[in-house]
Amino acid sequence: MATNEPLIIVSTFWGKQRSRRSGEQTRAKGDHQAMAADSQTLFEHPTSIDEVDPPLARLLSSLTKLQGRFQVALVVNTNDKSVELRADERVREIARQFDQLNTFVFGPTELGSLTRRLEQLEMLDMAPALSLHSYGATRNIGLLVAAIKGCERVIFLDDDCVVEDPAFIEKALFGLGGTIHSGGRLLGKTGLAMNAKGRFLTEEDNRISDRFWHWDRSRNSAISELLLPPRLTPAKLAFGGCLALHAGLFARVSFDAWIPRGEDTDFVINTRLFGGQLFVDDQWNVLHLPGEGVSHPLRFRQDVFSYIYEHRKLEFAKSQVDLKQVTAAQLSPYPGDFIDGSVGIRARVTALLRAIMGPERSFYWQAARKVVGDATRYACAHCADYFAFQRQWPTLVERLWQDVALGSLFSGERSVDRSALTGSFRAIEVDQGAASGGQA
Image 1 (cartoon, rainbow, N blue to C red):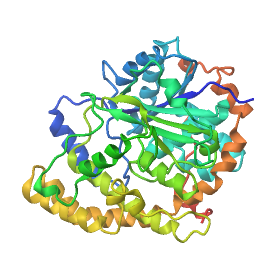
Image 2 (tube, rainbow, N blue to C red; image 1 turned 180 degrees about the horizontal axis):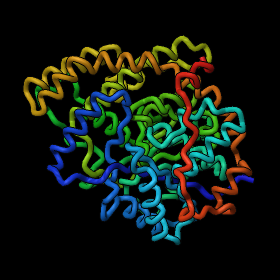
Image 3 (cartoon, rainbow, N blue to C red; image 1 turned 30 degrees about the horizontal axis):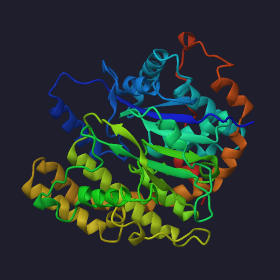
């Protein structure tokens, strides 16, 4: 029987310890290497493994003040496999400080158990999109944890958020699963994120070099529209650190593990492609306090990869007879203005202008020469992967719903003495080429 308690899913992101070298110098070197790497996903605000005051503890402390009953799942993600076991233990240590919360930690050991269960269910080809190293993949894992626990309502939070409203749970569940005025059901909604100044809008940078890349202006315009009445408005974008989903939706639609960043707004698009609709609740919000992020050139590269991938994905979707048509114009001003056919040329021109006028010129010269081509090749190689994964997603959720084998491990009935572990219990390594080849 499904539980009536909502599950708060917290994605917590960790990285290597800080170097004694200059932070900016170290970051620049690491970002330069990342720009040349094959993997395009890099967590933007990972917590250093040696952080004395990690943001996760701040978030969990705020959850202790909430009204109502709920469960908490902590999904441990790292941008470097060399620290994943240390990050897992660090998260468990932090969770133990808040024993008043009903908390479960999902780390590499649990991922190994999940992967072996997929093998038993003859669904191992889905494993590449279920990892702890991708924004979309970690969201999917959170949804599978909810299915295994039998939770029909989930609330996503990120570890760099703080909940200030004691009625947060009540507002998150407002209308969720109920009927809306159009006659359909409200199966998913997003709240808004405030910055440290209590504002929903970001400060706009009007540099000449960005005249073709006004990301902040487009996003502010989209958010300003959402702040107008009524309370619930159809969503064009979403904030993954304040997102509530009902099983009526998440059992049918998954996140995209191949988009480098922006998996939350991409989920809005996925929902539309499959005939659904997310809403924005302007009375529901969190405080977003991100730490030091990646450098501006790497952030730009990730954005270009994501926007070109999204454009290609929508074009590919047009050839699928079972999908609704979603266009960039329907999603304007954001993300629509950045996923139309002009995104490639605008990205290249912006990189050239930044290379001429701004700092970190060598990085932008490299971006101007390579990023659009690299992003296009990545999008062409992977834009069909999500749809192959999505075809099996409803079956996977159904088979894992209140799964007895995993449920006993996840509920603590089959406790693991971690001090006795002699191996990392890693998930089965899957050849992604072979795995995706059978789904075409």
